[in-house]
Length: 392
Image (cartoon, rainbow, N blue to C red; front, side):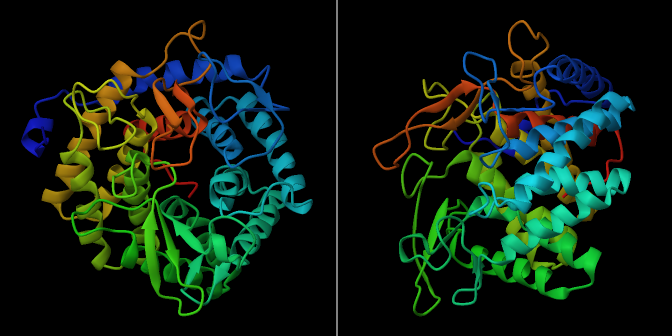
């Protein structure tokens, strides 16, 4: 059954006191995790509630470093700052040596590690690493179609496509223009989101996960899923990337047309939440389904709504702020981890990937913690308890 805004408003909201308690618990778990995850990183998802240690590879390691920076900002304890700076050195080496960077996820990796370091501490080495990452991302820009190619070698016919996740990688380009004065980075980001919104948003306000572009004409070709249940379903995390991604681009561009795009994508998300406000991994599934949840999608959406509310008129700002705080309450109560004996992650009941007949995924990280869920949960809590200055 579809949710209405009035139905969502019947639930309790997370206030500053509750969010502060949850943030205190999260910081305590992060402190315990430092022994394992300072020189190494947690893997993308937990297994039976606990993360394995990994080198600085894959697209997800920046989320853990972002968690360290959030813990430092909250506690003011230099133990978190020192651990984060050790990891920043690893990111510097990663981009210099081009280790696992042949993809678009430079923002996920470097905004939350190196840009954060520069903003919080003035670390020039971090700034240079982040600029190299921005340049690496800029190298994936395709003039035919005006978009950033997500995966594969640039120009490769079988991978000439964008994905909705990339909206969260655009801020490193906006930042690069701000810090260098070179407008070309921001222009690529602006062109990308214009292309994405032209093809990835459906008439019913749901979103495609991925969309192929015709390599010869640059015109949108067709959309498919990679991690959703069906090509024409709405993958919950993808819809959440749309919410936060549009909000972040509005932050930089102040294009009034993005307000309506934000409302469309966000209202779809809210209408299709199950009764307990924790989305299933795909919006094909509703209250009573035995399919797994994806708590990370809820955390991402909360951050996007809280960010966009800064720029809306009073009535709309209140609507999305109140919805976000109610989803956050549900996350705290149903998914927030308070016991390191249960898990060394922060947000339970996430889903990395769930296989289906129409996607090519194998089950991975199903009903587990994942590093981006941990990060966005902690960011959402931070937004409620403070006037947080973004790393994005």
